[in-house]
Image 1 (cartoon, one colour):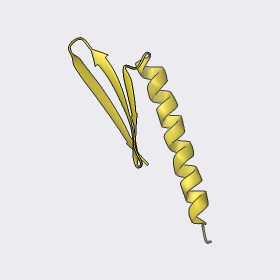
Image 2 (cartoon, rainbow, N blue to C red; image 1 turned 180 degrees about the vertical axis):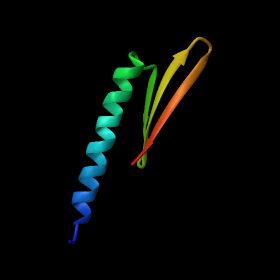
Image 3 (cartoon, rainbow, N blue to C red; image 1 turned 90 degrees about the vertical axis):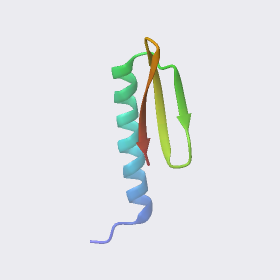
Image 4 (cartoon, helix red, strand yellow; image 1 turned 60 degrees about the horizontal axis):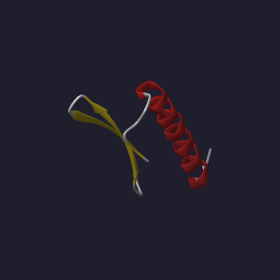
Length: 57
């Protein structure tokens, strides 16, 4: 079975989107989102610190 590169990319984006949605729902209000070419970073301020979750795509 041959899988097209576009299909793999679409699946990766879909999974990352679901993970991102779940992360946002779990964290509640986010204090920052950073998008780059290969990753998505979510920032949440907890007391004096920031928690960062990064999804590589």
